[in-house]
Amino acid sequence: MHSKQQLCGPLSHTNSRAATVALAAAIVLVLTVVVAQAVQAQTYQVLYNFTGGLDGAYPEAGLTMDGAGNLYGTAYQGGSMNRGTVYKLGHRGTGWVLSPLYNFRGQTDGGAPIAGVVFGPNGTLYGTTEFAGQLCGEGCGVVFNVRPPVSICRSTICPWTETVIYSFRGDTDGANPGYGNLTFDHAGNIYGTTYFGGNNAEGVVYKLAPSNGSWTESAIHTFSGTSDGENPYSSVIFDAAGNLYGTTFAGGAHGYGTVFQLTPNGSNWTENTLYAFQSANNGGKPFGGVVFDTAGNLYGATSSGGTNSGGTAYELMPSSGSWTFDLLYSFTGTAFLPGSYGSLTKDAAGNFYGTTVKDGANGVGSVFKLTPSNGGWTETDLYDFAGGAGGEIPYGSVLVDASGNLYGTASAAGANGYGVIWEITP
Image 1 (cartoon, rainbow, N blue to C red):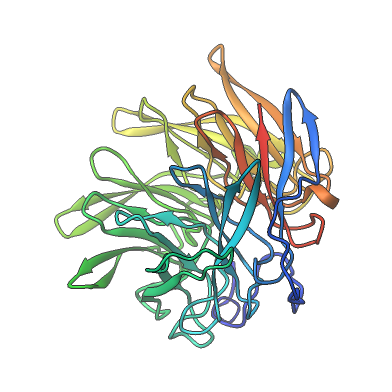
Image 2: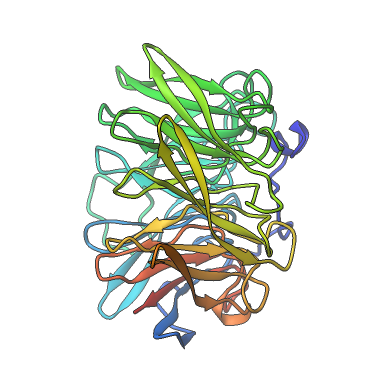
């Protein structure tokens, strides 16, 4: 998909970016709701407009919520060095206030966070950057931890402390983490993917194990680009038996990506390809990962293919040692790779939510809901992005809170042109 020079070189991405971002002299952090639109009994509103300054620019990742209802995420660019940020969007009265937590310098600390952040067992935030780091030319990315200051901070802007727990070398250990968030096991080990690097330069699944205050990295699977796929952009998830599941963007029997399983075997892992996408009918090029339902079935979405050329939503059902593929829905596309880049999100009622990047009525993205109905699935278009004040091009997954409210990001447009954080309420 990309050459090594593209992946390990200067900060770049599949969508063009402005070469520079003008840093704002002052950041407007207090919430201004600029859009409120009723869509099929849903209300869409913008919670925050990025300015391209210290708050960040072009948020591509989805959001994480803490127990108090505060939202955390990353922006791909912006910040003091235009290399991205980690931020918090917190409640203040009836509104929201954004606090920049960390500004990446694009040096050994990493740069260009394309994935979101997650809470680790110690209650602090962990994530990855696509580029920068200590090694691999301009940098092949890092795994980082950010934690709040030790002393109480009463200002809106209170920088957190960042620690790089691993810097990718770009060889057998992997290079360039993609859209997937990190995953922890019960022992506190971290699992993730890189879409480049490894013996065949096709990406790896890696494990980071804590040891005496540091972390030891091991590539538990290196993709070959043939039967097992290549370029895993997604996160990996565990089942109850300790097996890992994820997707590859390309490769596989038909060249359009795979869904894979990794089974622990002593200190090794055995890879099993559950499904190889065929693009034209069943979809292909999955950026997002997979999620389980309560019956042990896997669900996901693709960025291309399907009967309407806009990507698909799919289900994989285990049966007698194999897996059966079921196409749930084909989105209508308007451009190359217009479908979903994030993983699906399941609510307590068994519905799934997601975003598309360039589908929708206006060709700049949508938020959708899939509802089980009479043995099949019904798709509901919750919101069609239109650019302008409401934002456009939503890459990240949808976050659903206990009240059924949806939260997410749009990577572009908005009042300042640098993307937005949005909410959809029932």
